[in-house]
Image 1 (cartoon, one colour):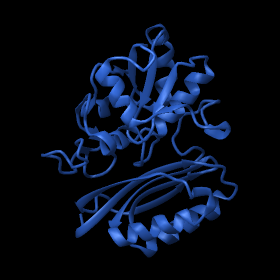
Image 2: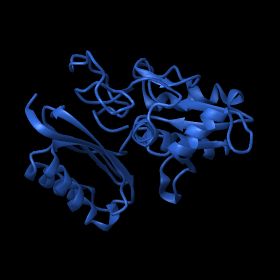
Image 3: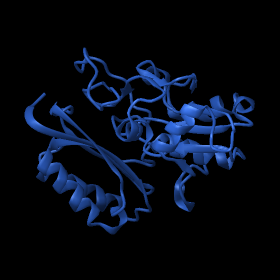
Length: 265
């Protein structure tokens, strides 16, 4: 890995209609290469999904240029710091989806799934129920290898190795999710957003997504109610609630990302 003194790592996704994915992919590659950034950028007709690292000033320039495009002006970017660039190269790829799910009713073209903020979720965890007194069920939308690094206490963990397996696993547990407020969560928000949209399309209107995923929760409120660390798809391996790499991780472990690429999930 290349050593730097001030390295910023950003993770972001944004669902928005992209009529020119080829041209957008070329533009994003040019912007990233101009700043010497490394990581993964996925582009599809439904939006973009990226995880990039580089010197802080160059990352800031990339984000500023990206937000100059009105389609991405409101894109939320999660950032953390490291002493190394945790990627070996830059990859920009065109994909059918920015996270593979292969289910109708899961793209937020008609609007996002209802979300709960990290601060509200932390309050619900402390009081043991939502604000209406309904029991709280946390549903982990990640694969089981990721969950080994950590998850929310008492969360439902699905026996899946790929995000495309989630629908069958959820339907098999549908009764356990009834009469509760279900909060779907994942690393950065993209999988729990698609999962929540799909579940609501199946008539499960008691499902919310955790806005910003686990990393957004860590950034906003820390580790309340969370046990362990959060696996990330780069050489840092896993981050603790302070968004710092956990001790003993050295990039020697590799888990395939849920969408088939190392990216933000």
